[in-house]
Length: 271
Image 1 (cartoon, one colour):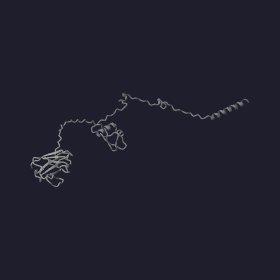
Image 2: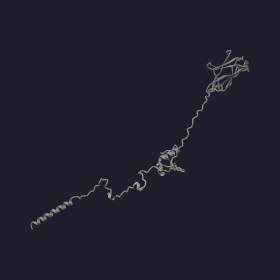
Image 3: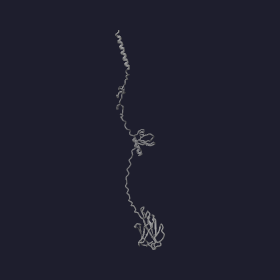
Image 4: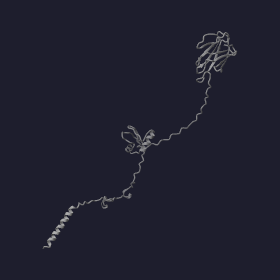
């Protein structure tokens, strides 16, 4: 009896120590890791519905995997509609709306308007939609080039009445009353297109008599008269101041410029 009491006490102490130790251990949490298998979420095959493949003989015509492209045909009386572009629309949206391709829209509208741009649309722009297909352009006949012979028109030579621009052309126009000192005179005219500065120019007779012009500007188509006798000079009349006549019928009047170059030779004829 005395032996059983200590054994019972020892057992009780042991159980108490084990209970206290278990209470002090951290609670263990069970963690379930996800599987990386691709079949983890697939329902077992036994629960999948059976797929019945219908053979061509049992179900009729065979349906191809990809639907064949439908080629639009132009029916008699078919008219391609005109779409007015609204805000926010793109060519892709419009093509999808009418079930046509962007390329067909671009091809048709470029045929109608070469300035049509696929990348730029504006609000209220009118676009023709090729729901009836794209018409085939009829080639036009190539025009025949006809060679037309040309004429070579010669350039007319400049004349005394049509001198080049900027040219001085001073000539003796006529001799009035040759042999009469009281009325004898030589008329000089500028047929050119530029002002002639006659200062230093001279009139010379066949006998060597010389008249030198005073400073004088002779405008185009203007004339000045040189009288042999005396008088008072003006813008259109100058006087030599001789007592005898300087010119005679059949004689020659020579006109020299200020550099001594002969500009004109005039033969005196009877009036």
